[in-house]
Image (cartoon, rainbow, N blue to C red):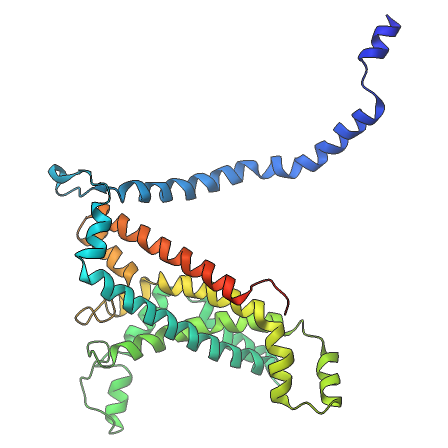
Amino acid sequence: MAQAAAVAKPPAPARRRRASATPRRLPYLLITPAALLMLGFIAYPVLSVFYYSLQNYNPTKPWRNGFAGLGNFTEIFTRDPQFWDTLTFSAKWVVVEVGLQLLFGLALALIVNQTFAGRALGRALVFSPWAVSGVLTSAIWVLLYNSQTGITRYLADAGIGSYGTSWLSDTSTVFPAAIVADLWRGVPFFAILILADLQSVSKDLYEAAEVDGASRLKQFWHITLPHLKDAIVLSTLLRAVWEFNNVDLLYTLTGGGPAGETTTLPLYIANTSVDAHNFGYASALTTVAFVILLFCSIVYLRLSKFGGEK
């Protein structure tokens, strides 16, 4: 009996391996329920969109519902000029917004990174617009652009422009007006991320550069910018995706008008699904937008060599 028990009992190293493996698996076991819930909440909507993109689905016209195959995608690329118009405007909106937000955000980060009296208050004022929700931001700027009580009223009082002018209803001014409104909220995002990275730059590098006679511009170009590369790449990518999907600000400010001048692709999708109840076609548009964003993100990360040597 003693011999059989000795044979059945695993050797001590095997027991130690099993005991040490349990603590390593424990963190994964603890996060499994949350991971499964997140997967369910994310995977189900995504798969539903892909499914409905292949369907004709309109609750107000149930007799037309059914499998459409690639019909929705064929219509998007061959018979829907509004798709190309909204995609073109979306690209223009993203490039202008992200470029200006990066430029002003970098400038603000460099300013508030300096030592001056009241720096803490200055940082709080710079970053405060980012804490305001998108809908509230839109409401603030709707009031500012109001033709009766807003900016144009005071400009008219000063002899600039005329009374009753509405920048949001004029095709020549609506785009700059919307750009300024979104800049107010978007610039602090870049300033926060860039400032956080600026504070990790070693001061010894700047001191050594000064000893070598490098100007402030050369220090910025050869020390600051290379150090900020990954922060800039990541922030521009995130902000580009958010700006491409921007609906709340433009919907509240202009509703896509005037005459469709400010209708982005996501806003077109929202109007197609919510107003027209054409969920099948809207799902196909969403799938196309997803593929465009995925492709552009991969190309951007490859070209920028994100995570590589600085």
